[in-house]
View 1 (cartoon, rainbow, N blue to C red):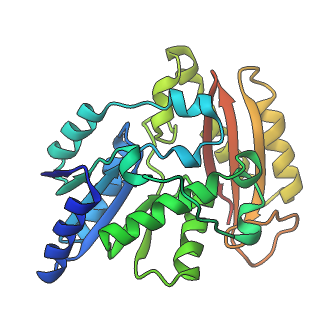
View 2: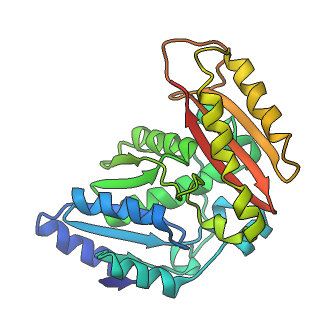
Length: 279
């Protein structure tokens, strides 16, 4: 497994791979790797000759300084995990390497960023777009891999690729869940054992609501979810929205388009997100 810390060294390697006609898969991460990341890695290895995993806690996508400070970091464990799972290349740049000057890029994703995470975390998606587009440029990836849990982020990245005609295919992989149903997340490590045992209720409540789709209106389903969370004083729901799976705009009535429920909740001082497809 090759490890690069500079854009120059990574670019030289990528150029050599491209000259050899190799296909490249990119797995962008912020580290604190878990089984969800490994599921993406396995898919990337199936699809490509070479897989590059980037590890960079991107400061410009955090609108909460405390969240940035608390974000889990364990680079040695991450490297060991990637090597054990046969990743080909790891890119581990410093902040100065990525941002020798403060970034000035400004992106506009219209209505896609005016709901849910875009409201809760102002500037977040601009920060995501800055780092992801740079990674696409540096790695010249043929395919890039993202988990469906970050449903809105995936929509934003697809729109970034569309707007700028970036020659990369976005591969969206199913949510990887622990045995008890909790969606895998680096932030799960920050939960106390007691609250970790409670966290699977997020998925359970969403699943229960999905079982009622045939009998309830969408507004009733939303009420069902919100009332269920009120039964657990440890949860604080930041938002729960039922949205069109393409436009991400709130949906009030059932129709022909796909519909998903997206949620952000606080538990034990940790912000967790999840989603549920209704139809």
